[in-house]
Image 1 (cartoon, one colour):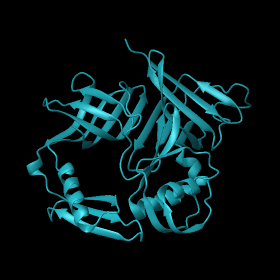
Image 2: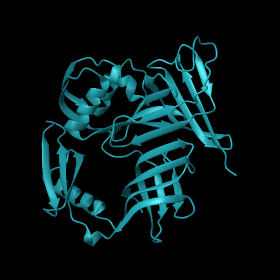
Image 3: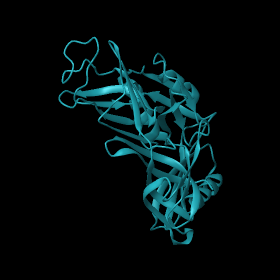
Image 4: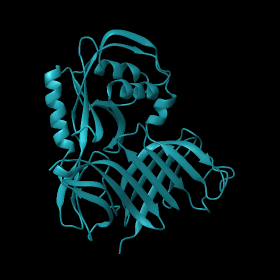
Length: 325
């Protein structure tokens, strides 16, 4: 018999640890800058060493929070971040964000470059934050660039808008690290097996064949010396649009890249999501080896995970990205 286990650690004016929660919901998504976590604490919670307590918790905005979950006292870290909002009442609710919370508060120094690499730019905008980061794509020259936004998070959002560069936190070995790049990281990824009627409890999966898919790809290449953009479009004119980016490709090379991306998007396999138990635990950018109710099987990048924990059990809703095999 599996028994739900959890541990919440809050570090602020004091350190509090709780091994019971009413409910918890965590959303992590490669498409968003920020992962979120919402926790409802038990009604009769007590805050050791604090005045008041109960409906008047001593938790403050900006306190660090770590959420661990599992079965039978075997816990794994599911979220590391900061309290964004405390809803006072019964039950007490904590709305939290990952490390991007701190970067939304961190001011960035305005600066201009005649030419700048992605490595230098990210290092400059993170100066003084203490945030560790990893570049997914190396040796990218962005060309002329000006830092114009007020906060680090706003500047990262601008990089996504201008260049298609993704930025998000991943928890690796219980440490939050910021990843920046065009593609997805290969380090620290796990592959876990999910099979319908075994550890898949519900599915919203559609198995589509390549020849039935209508799609077009718009590909943009950022030129190293000038920061100018070259854009090409391939595929079905009336198809679903996917936008991709690359670095320093000539027009003919970019067209070849766009065609290869079109082939990658127009695959025979699953699209959609499924819901599994809390174990095996996966995070965004991990790999799901999935066998659905129709018996088809494939490996897919995980682009989004919604984790819920509480009276209804411990579940993961996993949204599939590109096929990997």
